[in-house]
Amino acid sequence: TWGGGVSRFDGKRWRNYSTKDGLAGDIVYSIAQEPNGVLWFGTNNGLSRYDGKNWNNYDQSTGLLANNVYALAIAPNGDIWAGTQRGVTRLGK
Image (cartoon, rainbow, N blue to C red; front, side, top):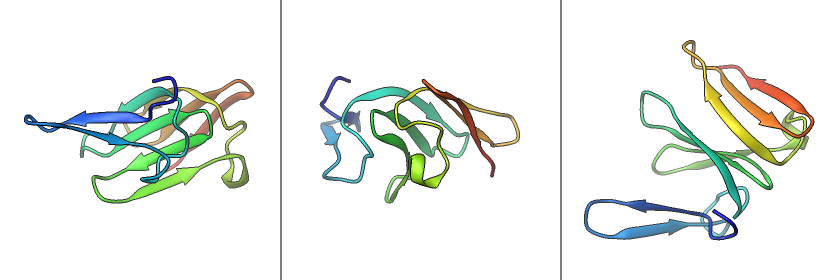
């Protein structure tokens, strides 16, 4: 999205999530989902993890090489790989 956060459809209605809800940034470049359903969002202001109830955010202050996260991948071992304009960061499980 370009400034609108992310939206989720539950089969009946749409729900929007933004920085007001806990998303790191309202511009979302990438999304990845773990096998257990946990969602990861690469944004203009860091990386967000959402387990359906709680948000956890990661940015340069917590180890990302840059805050713009353009690409995400989840490795078979569960590690999260985040691609930024300054390189790739691995978040180990």
